[in-house]
Length: 319
Image: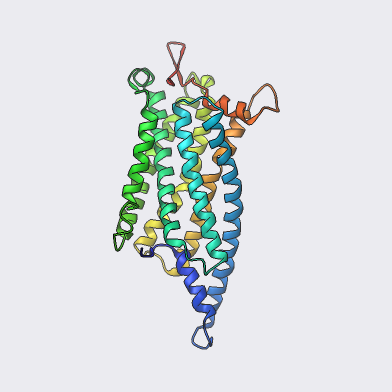
């Protein structure tokens, strides 16, 4: 399997090896040496920070997955959140092993790790987009949504999105295709041009319907959590797609692309780690007892079925 050419992180490790293997520094300009040393320091600092974020994020997502799988009653919301937590965990695991690559340059596992990272990162975006679209429909067209929503729609959409992520990223063909850069380029463009505007539009509509409507006091906790998750995705999740697009088209030189990649990867790790904290803070808010178990906190979010009110009566869209 060929190595991908779109990751400055791997190019950087090759630069370190080349730098360490130089018998004489006379062939390298002083400014280039200084720039390489700065990148070495920056990459190690970034790898350390990402490792810490990944550890806390993996713990939080693992707790969410455990409770949703075994302790909380299944419903359409939990199906989406469970798949989203699994995708975020995959992103964090991949980043964690890539950080090991940074600290151990001889560890040659980056090709399949990058494929796993792209797969889970893209799946996370698609799942969050699907959640935002469905919940936007539930508040904009509550009666239609309640009457026409298929019972197993959440499971079907999650399955289709995972399959689509695999196909678009060429995961099923990566072992026979010589160069998968074109597939990755198209994927990044689709992620940014399609997913990001849809999420922004749904975020605006959800905010208007849940915070600016006459029935704003009836909004559910899940919508409060979802709005925060969508905002975090817009500010922390989309920079990596932008970075990939710029890297694919060689719009930046090596130094600038390295800085951009470091910042965007740190943002991506935050985006995949923060959701469990949001669930806890929103679910615990305004509860009668200050020391509630995490199970009750999650139930207060995912069992909340008040989407809006029609004619003064609450409308439930969860089956």
